Amino acid sequence: MGKLTRVIVALTALIAGASIGHAEEWQTTTSRDPKDVKFVSVKAEKFEFSMEFRCDEHDWQDQRLWVKFLGPSLPRLYGEAGATAELSLLFRRHGGVLYREAWDAYFENKEPDQPGWQGSIIAGKSELEALASAQTLEILDSEALRIYSFSAKGTAAGAAAIRKHCKLGAD
Image (cartoon, rainbow, N blue to C red; front, side, top):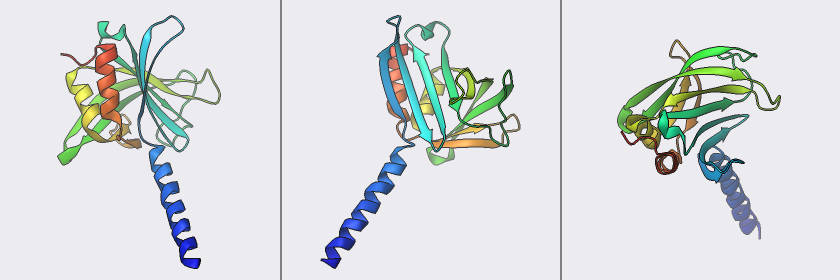
């Protein structure tokens, strides 16, 4: 019975570890907003932080993909009402290939439990390919220093949904 107990404990630890890793996997949601406009949300959570790419069926007109980074202030990114930041997203791809996209963000704290940085990026073919094929996604400050990073597991499905439902990344 002692051996069986050790096996059960080991399996429980393995399953718990898998659940923790899954929390950072990007989840893709497609739905309709209250005005019946179809939208796509691609979101990951890591500890008390979350990042989201979002678009709707009308965003093809200006080729913009909305980006949110929610969570408490960080040493290199202090958020306060009205603050702006010149950030960038760094997509680390297989083989050491890097793709960097500028992101002019502003801080918003309308909901006290969800303060964060928002803005948009161009969403052309190369940007969505970088999102789809990335291994990690880093947020960089204006000096190109890393502020935060996420695993990019699950972003390929998100990029496909963005292409399909928002008609972005076709150029």
